[in-house]
Image (cartoon, rainbow, N blue to C red; front, side, top):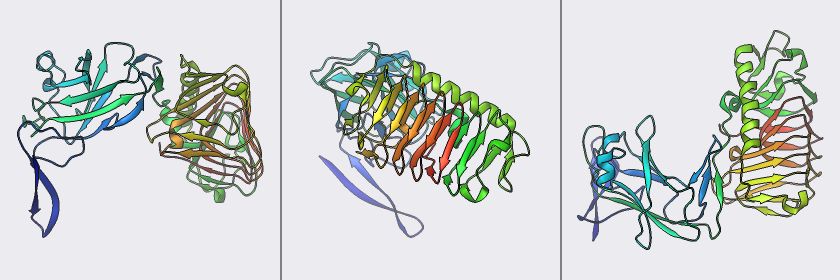
Amino acid sequence: MVFLSACLLASGGMKRVFAAVDPGVSVAPGTVAGGATEPTVISSSPNNWATDVPTSINTRENVVTGTGVTATFSQPMDPATLNSSAAGNSLTFTVKETTGNDVAGTVEMNAANTEATFTPTSSALNPNTGYTATITTAARNAGGVAMAHPITWRFTTNPIELTGQTPVNLGEAGIFAILTKSGITDVFPSAINGDVGTSPITGAAIHLTCTEVTGTVYSVNAAGPLPCRVIDPTLLTTAVGNMQTAYTDAAGRTNPNFLNLGAGQIGGLTLVPGLYKWTTGVLISSNVTLSGGSNAVWIFQIAGTLTQASATKMILKGGAVPKNIFWQTSGRVAIGTTAHAEGVILTKTMIAMKTGASANGRLFAQTAVTLEQNTVTQPAH
């Protein structure tokens, strides 16, 4: 039996409601229970009762492991109570199949000691299988206070073996809406909601005006547009280097979930999260939908060009966010008249946006970006 009691704190209002939990009862991450000083798990990945969880994950280092299980705590924890050999022997953080079989693995904390991640020893979890993750009251915070009750959450893997992806690390490039090596042309007026930069070419190659940019225009010299131009060649050199590293990361992911889907014609399709690879170009001739949760990641590896037809849209469903969508192309990218794109575009060559086209994302080109009365909105970093 679980019973709740309201706790009115000082300063004249209800600040938090604490739950008293009978001994032996487990609760899910995010449940407000225990006292204010006691640590608890405020969120988890995968989420409680998540379905279609990938059986493995491809990391930024292009290392494929079984999908990790992460618990985020309300306060810094004592790592020795979670990832030491003693904690392992006492089974502080466990993952089990619903059949009761233990999953072998290791536990590591992040630098702040607020996240614990259980990484399976095997290269993948089993498909179409239910799993239960548990953290016991042996887990203690940095001050030695134990959790008031065990935390348990459950998830089910995808019916087929599916490798999920971690986001591509953009580094300092992630502060930009548009970043290029050889300049930005513009047919006035465009609207860029975010920062803009070019390097190593001079600021004279930035043809945007300050009235078109809600953010900062970074230039390697004094030739950039005024009064919004900021001279910062060091930042730009780092950002362009990070842009190239991000391109290499996205291009280097292995074991695609989908190879040459639709023979390169993806208009009209609904795309689930994962790694997509084409040995040709890709054409979006009609609306395409990306459906997945807020933590889901899409990486599109395109050996040729990416062409989005006029008046078409990339549509996001299920909580999908543009910062986790990566279009890596060896050839040029063309976004048609009044078309709408979503995600981070990483191209080896140029990006051309036609009249009235828009994008929620980032335009990263190792040559130039051309604009024609476009709107580009930078997503969260």
